[in-house]
Image 1 (cartoon, rainbow, N blue to C red):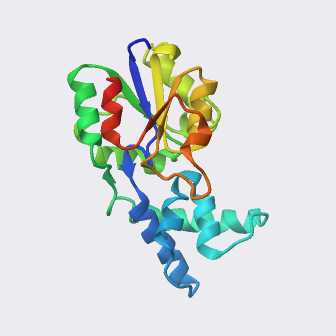
Image 2 (image 1 turned 90 degrees about the horizontal axis):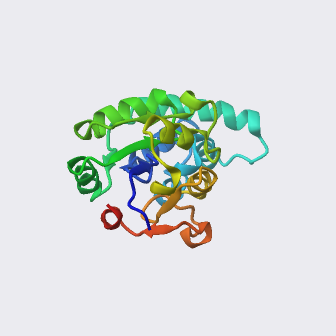
Length: 218
C-alpha cells in the first residue's frame, strides 16, 4: 500500500467520545415527559445515527412519525447545545495519534455530519491543542454523509490523492462515503457501532479496535 498522505476522521465516535453528553441530553428530554432514565448503551450506539434517532429512542416514537420526530429532534439539540462540552473527551489514544501526525507533518482533518453550530465549538474546546487543519460540516457542502462531497472537498483543499488518503469513521455511512470518494477506508470498531450491526459488514480496508491501532498506518 502507498504511504498515506491524508488522514481524515469522523468526529463523534471516532475522535471524540460525545456519548456522555448525548446521554445527559436524552435524559433531560425524557424527564420533561415523565419518562425513566434511558439505557446508556442504547443511547451510545445511536449517537452516530444522528439526533433524529436519539430523539425517536428517547420518546419511543414510531419511525414514520417524521414531523413529530423532527420537533423533538430540535428540542433535543437545544438541550444538547447547553451541555455538549460537559463530559465529552477524546478517546484514549487519540492524543498520541494526532500528536504523531502533527510531529511528522502529515495532513489530517475532520469531516462530520455534526452541524457546524456544535462541531466548531466542540473541536475548538476539546481538540484545540492539536490545531485541527480543517473541519468540514454539512453546512459547508450542502449534504451529509454517505454523500462523498465533504470528503471530496477535503481532498481538494488539502491537495491530496484519494488513493493515498484514508477516511476513518465508526458507522457504515462513513465507509460508504469513503468508498464513493475512492479513498482508503478505516472502521473505528471502538466507536458507536449500532447494536444490530458489525464493522465486518462494512468491508472497510482497515478495522481499528482502538485508536492506537491507527498509528500502524502512519
